[in-house]
Amino acid sequence: MSAPERLSIAQVSPHRRATRNAVNEFVRRVSEELERRGHEVLRIGSGESVKRLLGANSPDIVHVHEPFAPSVSSAALRHSYALNVATFHKPQERVLSTQVARPLVEVFFGRLDARTVATPATGELLQRYFPGPYELVEAAGEERDWAAVAAQLEAIYRRLLARRHDPDGDAGVRERIAGRPLIEVDLHMHTDHSPDCATPVEVLLETARDRGLGAIAITDHNEVSGALEAQRIAKEMGDIRVIVAEEVKTAEQGEVIGLFLEEKIPRGMTMAETIAAIREQGGLVYVPHPFDRFHSVPDYEHLLDIVEEIDILEVFNPRVALTAFNEEAERFARKYRIVPGAGSDSHVAQGLGSVRVRIHDFDGPAEFLEAMRDADITRKHKNLVYVQALKLLQTTGRPKAAKRSVPDAKPVRGGRPRKKRRSPSKS
Image 1 (cartoon, rainbow, N blue to C red):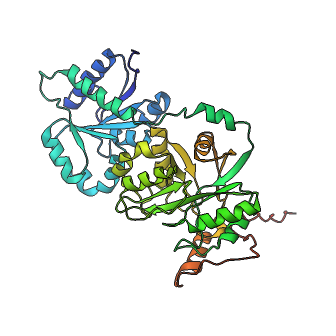
Image 2 (cartoon, one colour; image 1 turned 180 degrees about the horizontal axis):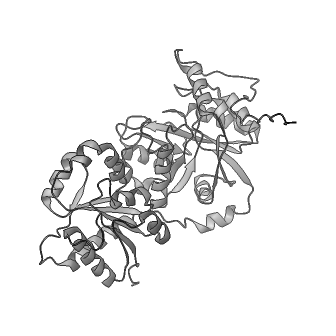
């Protein structure tokens, strides 16, 4: 039997390390016990550069104590790309965090992968303001068995680490596709088979071909008819491939995309039921715009519930209103080692290909997933206001358009970067 993996753990206290108090005593005693168990422990206190230290050490676990803003503990959550554990010690209300800065605190608490409390009273208090699962790790009193506390925390750390995806994948499949040509793929787009899009299938295909895409995933909302039609036409065209997909609205847990589908999955099921339906068709689970609060997305705890089931997480979507949402998706993919993906989420053909994934050519979902492990994500400049305005002009205030057939479809123009005008030379 092999020895347990040695972990790298950062223990972050909101106090200066020289300060004597219950929190620092907890950090000191637990750190010593973890080191005795063979782990590498980095202790960080107030006044130290948490960003630099975390960046230089890349720990497996960042364990923050009393991570209320503003503090070095909350700063650690801002800069951490590791799995994050929190311990809350004192059963006292913090007016600044629970009332004034509550929205900011909730953002940082949303990056926690496990929450622990030192006393039952602390857990009861936190449940009132920041609901979530809190695990009791009793640490009060001079007679506390610190070895047992460290063992309990180590078990939590290992439980989290076990949820990370295997970064190696299937080496045999990757070797098989390694010599194939590279193609560019857009993994998220819509046709007029979606209620909020007016782009005919033929126009989308011609535009994709014109923009040099080798494959596209058509992800209409709660429908696969457009993707199936596009796949049939694309086979006749011969130079572009269509992945049949669907962006499915679950009952209460946001949207999820199934890639490589054969038939429509009904909306309104639970996330677990929807994922099971994707799997039944041999499809891949792709989570779009996972942290964009302006879209229908899973809450953080629901995303944690399905970590093992996610094949690809969308880390860049140009239609996301705030850059921070994309950054949060990238952070989540990195910490759980989930294959990153990206797509234009185009609802007008002008936006097609604004984000591209360059991968080796593939045949079927298994090869596609392995190709995505080595993908390069590139972004083409598109004017977001321009393409959003086009979407509104094409869809708002009109009855749902019939699925139009365009026998002599042409690629659309527009949505491309403008050439800079040369400024007149000064004489």
